[in-house]
Length: 280
Image 1 (cartoon, rainbow, N blue to C red):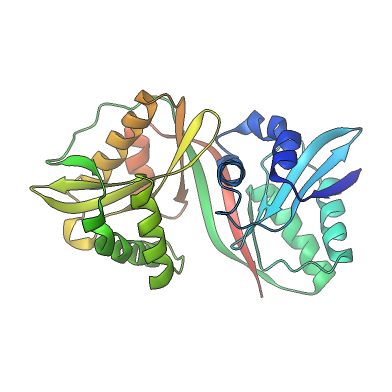
Image 2: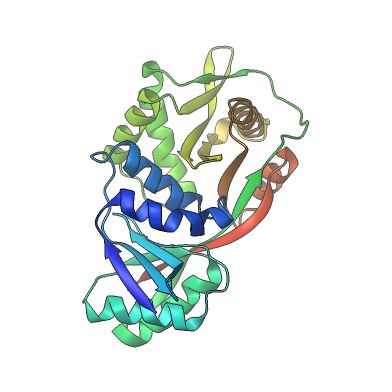
């Protein structure tokens, strides 16, 4: 069993794409980041890109971003594969502050890393990964979905900070301002607007070969429970499918029954799980 680190996103993509595409929606995070690296090499930060080979076949992949270490979702991954990775990283004195991946593999990794490093990990978030192939007929609230514009920048930035609080993910004002400008600039951010007033937002995030990921779904408290988020997600999902994507995907907090219920009504169904661990 061999582990190889590569520096080229193009080479990394060529080597691991066949593996990741076996579970395209479940691997939307890694596939989406790789696609952004290929589209804009200067615009996306990354660290290590690694893969595991067994009998001359790629059986696993991992990568480092400024935020997390990401583990692939691959079939038939056993403890030997994970142990080989953790020992490899430990021998090279590589720092791992947090890790995200499918629950089974990530938990195996964490247990072994705790033993090697004498650290303690805590669960930061448990998530479900959803996929949608067709949008169900759901009641659509008053209003319409429109692309966010420059005039919405300050509001989007504020909502991103508030979204981070709800999602237990710290988003600084500086980062929120940069993200708002980026989302508006590439026309990925949409707002649900009622009588000229934005009341909810949703963003088309990463894309893979056949799918698009939706994130940053947020409605401020004053506008909650009026169906705006449901309408925004359903309308954007339909728009993405009509534009040529075969499916949409998204992450939800396992412990948030409201959002999970909303997405299921729209037509999303669970295809995988994900867990985020942070090391002390």
